[in-house]
Amino acid sequence: MDMFLIDYIIRGHQINLLYIMIRNMIMAHNQKQKSLSYGQCLTSIFKHFEILLTGMDRTLYSQLMEIDNITLSKMKYMLNEDGVWVSKD
Image (cartoon, rainbow, N blue to C red; front, side, top):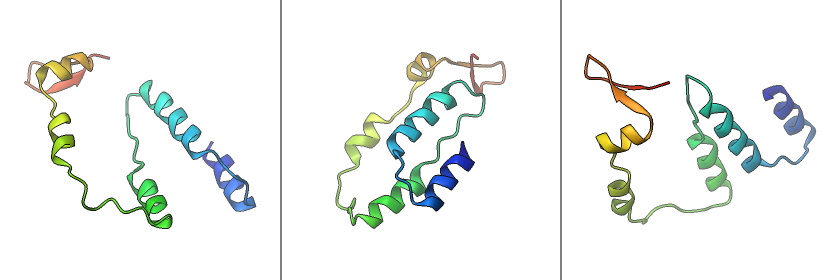
């Protein structure tokens, strides 16, 4: 898939970035190593379109992002015998 995207970009074709990102999220869900690093890509897009993200109140979001034992259990994680959270899969 990467070569397909590179070819499209080189040839100047339009791509549906949102579709590609969602497809990658779906594929990552079924993999052991789940890594979705879109931060750098999105930062470049925001800079290009001069979208400022400064001045936003992030405290509300950080409170919502707190992950406790209940949340981890719902996400299908469990504590192993060493006291480390691991995926049930």
